Every structure is written in structure tokens, then in C-alpha cells.
Image 1 (cartoon, rainbow, N blue to C red):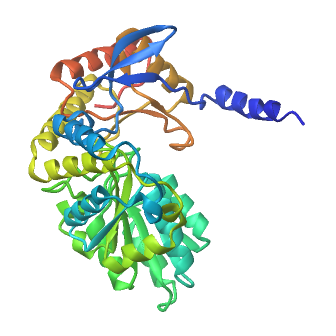
Image 2 (cartoon, helix red, strand yellow):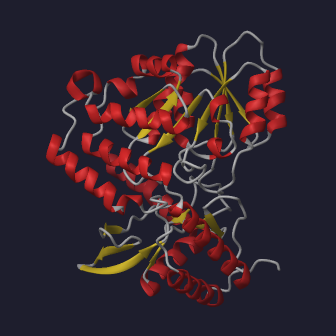
Image 3 (cartoon, rainbow, N blue to C red):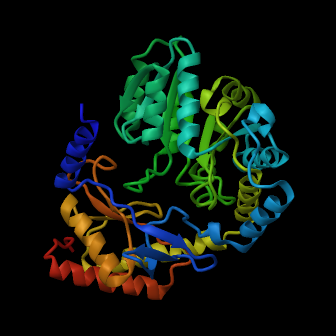
Length: 404
């Protein structure tokens, strides 16, 4: 059997639909974020990155870089093994204490990525709690969906951010079965924010555990960067808060926080924790420095919000349609996969602007978009340049304008 032919057939189908993913070859420039080098056809040119999840530019912060370099000199590069086989380092425990403090929890547990922390925690909870039912928001991330699927627990999907639908589904379940309400604070593609307090109220009413993914919110919201749950003053009522080190904190890795018993339970039973090599100590040291900085510094968050507001205002004045939300994520709606890819290519080729097209299956068909994430390090001139490019492309491509 010609397996390569089978692979190629499906790849060709993706390309015909406009959903094949092309990756730009980039080189981040230390101290020059959001600039990067783009390697193509044997040449390198500077581009401005407009779709980074390093939301606050902390991956370029001098203190974070210095902490990583110091830790490499002190400990070497790798962790030396899994956490249970020589891989638990002092820097891991210091970071877990920092994370527990950030969310006001008794304990925290590190993972190699945010995807793995969701997959491992939800699959372990669902499989180890007898007769468990997991109520999953319809907009949840693929990592949460995979964790729930792998757990083989009963799954109930409730309409996105619809508290009434959640309550109806909770009320229909037997009172004596373990229930977990799993949802996110900031949804990464639409940028909308969950009604966390109302969700927690309903979950508590029916004795359900709450599982909150704060991946796109930690570092960005709350007086210390603890996320939307901290901003709304409900973090203490949430059973488990999950987050990442790879977005606003600018490093890599994932984590969960909760009671000491909960974190020890996941630590003891989660294959995604037990059987994988631990994060390098230098990564943990850098992440701890980033978290500690954002606990006391609001400057990065405030400047980011100013630039997000400035971009939104410019899009409104130009009549370019973008999805309204209360977060830092600015989706510009194209609603066609081929046009979305074409626009992204034009922005890169003609304007030195890099933004990745967002197509199916990341978003539903017919909702294709360019997803912009302004940072505190994007200047007013950067925004003016982006808007000049978008206005030109909207005219040239005869794209629809927002209704005034």
C-alpha cells in the first residue's frame, strides 16, 4: 500500500479548501520584540509580528532573560529526568510555590505545556472519580476536549457561556454523582470572557467542582496577574485553576493550582505528569521571575490595554469589521479561508507584517479571520503602519466594511 499517496491526497484536499497550514520561518530578535527575522528563499528580512501569544513581551524582558541565563550557568540545561526519577529540581518547587501564591491556592503542579496540563488533569479526574460527569463549555480548547475524551467520563456539552443551559444540564443529573464544570476565562479565538461568577454560583448550587482554564488571562488580568478569576474576586471559590507559562509569562510550560490534596492526586495518577521529562530548571527560574515581576508591575498590562484600544478605534474609523469583546484579542473577520490566506500573504510580502490566518478547524467554517494581539511593545507607528496596510488591502480586494 502506498501510504504516502494516502497522506498526499488528504493534504491536497486541505490545500484546495484553503485550510492547509503554512508556517513562517521566524527568528525572534532579543530585545527587539515585536520584530523578527523572516527566512525565505535564502534571504532574511525584518517583519513585525502581530499574532504572538507572548502577550506582554515578557519573553524579551531583561530580568527574565537574566534569570534563565543564571540558572543555566548554575544547573546546566536539562532537568535530568522525569519528576519522579531525579527530575524534581529546587527551581520547580520554587515556581510551584509562586504559582500557588498567584492564585491563592494551597499548591500547584507543573507540566511541560498548557495542552498537557489540561489533557492530564481532566483525563485523570474524569477517569479516577467513579461515575464522574464533566460538563464542558461548547467553546472549550482542544486540549480540554482531548482530556475529557481520554477520561471516558460521561460528557455533557453546555452552550457557550450560557449559564441557564448549564444549570438545566446540572439539574438533570443525579445529585450523588461527581460533577465537574470545565470552562475557560478568555476564549482565544473570539476573545470573549466567561461570566465566571455566575458559573461558579450555579456549580456550587449543584455541588459541582469547577475547572477553570486561565491560559489566555494569567499575567494580563487581575491586580497581580492572577487572571479574570482574580479580577472578579472569585479565585478562592474555584476548585482548580489551570494556566500556562508560555503566553503572557513569556516562557513555556503549563500548570494547575488547587488544594494540596487535589494537586497530589493529579501528581500521583496523571500519566502526562509521571512519564515525561520535567521542564529544564532554567525555564522554571525564568518563569518565576516573570510571574514575580507581573505581580507587582501593572505597567505592561496598562500599556497593552492602551494599544488594544487604539487599534480597535482605528479599525472602527476605517470601517474594518472586527469582533467586539472585552479582552486583548482583536479578531478581524474575513469569513473566507482563501481570502484570509491571501490577505496574510499580502501583509507579509508587501508590508512586512506577520499575522497568521485562522481557519478551520481552529474556528468554524465561515468564521475565518486574522487574529491580532497588540502588545505593550507595539508602538503607535506600528499601529499606523498596520492600518495603512489593512485600508489598502480592503480597497484592493473589495472586502466588506462594517456597518457604521
